[in-house]
Structures are given as C-alpha cells and as structure tokens.
Length: 455
Ligand SMILES: Cc1cc2nc3c(=O)[nH]c(=O)nc-3n(C[C@H](O)[C@H](O)[C@H](O)COP(=O)(O)OP(=O)(O)OC[C@H]3O[C@@H](n4cnc5c(N)ncnc54)[C@H](O)[C@@H]3O)c2cc1C
Image 1 (cartoon, rainbow, N blue to C red):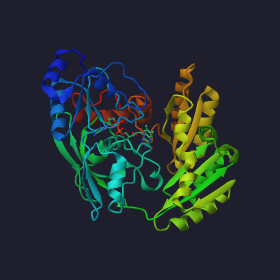
Image 2 (cartoon, helix red, strand yellow):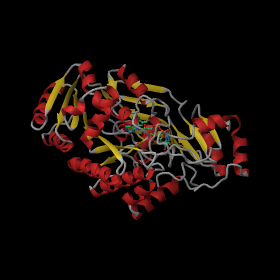
Image 3 (tube, rainbow, N blue to C red):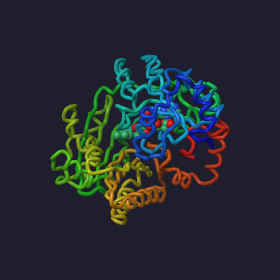
Image 4 (cartoon, protein in one colour):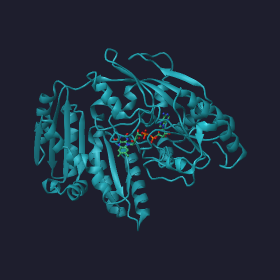
C-alpha cells in the first residue's frame, strides 16, 4: 500500500516532476475526487492529470512510481462503488480526454478506441456501419469505455448479449511502473498465452491503466419486438421470467419491477401503474426472429399475467418501457439512494426479491427493487432516511447476506470499489483473496494503483 502524506517531500518532488502535466488547483482537483456512489474519502487529492495521450499516462505513472504516489484512474466518475473516489495524497488520472474512436471495421466487426470514448458514442459510430456495441449500462450516455472495461459493466441487454468482458478482444495497458503492454488478440479468436485481458477487465483500476481497446461489434438487430406484462405479485413476475428460460426463449431484455417501484413511478409521472398489478415485466426480443419469439413470450407470460401487451412499433415500445425507464429517477426523487447490485442464480430470482422485501420489513428501510431478471441481477435501491442512516446500512448488509445465502454474489456489475470491500473478502474467502492479492503485488508491487479498493 502506498503511504505518502499530501505535503510530504515525495509529493512535492512528484508534483515538480509532473510540471504542467498536473494541476493542483483546488477547485479542479476537488471536482474530480468523487464518483456517483456518494462515498467520500475525506480530503482532497494531491493533483489532477488530464491525459491527452498514452505518453501522458506513461509519464504520470513513472513519476508516481518513483515517488510512491497513489494514482486513481478516472473515466466519467459514474461508478457506484466508490472505486474512482480519490483520497488525500493521490493523483487523479483523468482519461476522459482520450476519446477518439480510431477505427470501426465492418468486415472484421471490431472497433479500436481510446479509453475515454463515451459508450453511446461508440454504439452510434458502429450504427453507421450497420453494427452495434451490445453492453448498454443505464449510464451509457455518460460512462466511458475505459470505465466500462474496468468495472466489467453490464446493462439491460445482458440477458442475451452478456457483459463488457464478452466484447473485449485486446487491450493496451500501462502498468504501475509506466511499462506499456498489448494484451490479448486483435482477432476474434486467439488462445496464445494466459488470459490477461480477462484479468484486467473488472479490476477497477487496481492492476493497470487501460489506454486502448479492441472491441467486438455485432450486426445491428433488424427489428425489436416488445412485451409488457403486469402480475398480481412480484413472485409471479419473477416466476414468469424463469419460465421464459425454461421455454428455451432468449430475449435481449427481461426487466422486472416491483410494486414499491411502480408506486414511485406513479407519483413521479402521474400514472396508475400500481393499480394494474404488484409487478411489471418488460421483455424485448430482437433480430430476424423477433416477431416469432415475442409471440412465444406472450404465450408464456399470459399463463400467469393479469395483462400482456406486445408491439413492434418503436414509439409504443417506448411508452410500454416507461415503468422501467423511469424507475431510478422516480426513486431518486424520494431521497438520497444507495443503489445495490446483487445477482443470484436465475432460478432463485423470486426467492431473492422476497428476501429483499423481508430485509425492508425487518430494518424499516425503504427498499425498491428492479431487476435484470434474465440474468438474475437485482438492483435493490435503498432510500436513506436522514433520521435513521444506520437502517440503510443494516439493510445493505441484509441484502448482501441474502445474496450469498442464495448462492449469489454481492456485485453483478457495479463493482466492489471501496464500499463493498469487506463483503467481497467474505464472498471470496481467504485462499482466493490471497491469490488475488499475490497477482496485485506482482503487477503493482508498490501498491500505487487505486489503493484501498477492491481487495
Ligand atoms: C444512472 C446510472 C446508471 C448506471 N447503470 C449501470 C448499469 O446498468 N450497469 C453497470 O454495469 N453500471 C451502471 N452504472 C455504474 C457506472 O456507470 C459503471 O460502473 C461504468 O462502467 C463506470 O464508467 P466510468 O467511465 O464512469 O468509470 P469511473 O466511475 O470513472 O471509474 C470506475 C472504475 O474504473 C476505473 N477506471 C476508469 N477508467 C479506467 C481506465 N481507463 N483504466 C483503468 N481503470 C479505469 C476507475 O479507477 C474506477 O475504479 C450506472 C451508473 C449510474 C450513475
């Protein structure tokens, strides 16, 4: 672990060597020290480097390594686990300015990008060639590809298309001491060497800094078909999502919304969705067989739903999706939120929602649940009661315990960062943790990359 005080000789020497590359202007540095989790490391970082190219990254890391200064790499700061929050004495390495899409190849169906490219911009560039970039986190309009890679971000289309890891073929990275490496293969297939790309994906800035990526793209789906269903209870909605899998269907989107969330959306938008049922399920199929598949989806849902509507019309699909699309803003309108992110085996989704509701009843915390039901990923959202903040923490602990008890994980896609470090240690167990710390020590022997996070 790097240990250096903000006013130490090492910090002063490091700043002097970085020269004009870094700024220590308080306002600029302070603006880049938090992420969207709200976790505050208390104190202001030493300096901010806004990298314009790989050379800036190499130079920053060489200097930081020489003087043992902690470095917190930053994309858009949209993370929800405190991973990009930078404490006193650290250098914030902001890569959002390295935002060029270097190439999109319609035959190889790969893109070469810099890490600061906004996720939605890559998808737009791919669309110009009839392609798409499948990972679509809810933050797609603001998050960067580098941040998506470092957190292994997922999204709504994960049910069919998987997560960021499934689209990363090769990475250019800079190690803690400034050494540059090309990892992986620029080809769609390639098995030479250990899978170091897989190691860096999801490592939350603790193993290396990603300065370039070769990403897989897919042909853009020709059409999208949508089904929207209401159920009497969330248990029935969850069971219907499981039945879709049992029927051999593989929609791109399967999103479940519980009653408290429907009530929040009603208050936010002036609708009466909660009067229609205790849960809402949004299903989307895409590609050439979308129309046929949605007919089968409708049949499965109709067995237990109180109502089902399907459409091929994009405007109507927008309208039907509103209960899911507005879920987070509607809950956020009720107070400060903790956005949790657990996953359980898909077959245990219903049990997980019931367990989260039991935690709400036990702790008295307000908890809302929406879920990427197709891959067993729940987002329980806790609204923090300012008069009883401890209830929110107790509720979060109850949610993590329930996830592990159901054979699941404490983070499906948002990462561990600072906030879930203790629970990650519990999930991993001492033997796995020791191996992972050994890998970290090998790549970053001085512990300067995002210290105090993840492991
Ligand atoms: C409204 C909202 C909705 C969201 N929805 C989703 C969702 O559906 N799915 C999902 O997975 N996440 C979601 N998120 C969380 C967040 O957007 C993702 O974690 C995203 O991948 C973070 O990208 P970023 O560029 O903001 O990274 P940051 O927050 O800046 O950084 C996140 C981590 O990545 C590291 N990092 C960043 N860039 C690099 C790099 N180039 N090299 C090495 N390390 C790097 C940082 O050090 C940090 O550890 C959501 C967030 C918000 C606010």
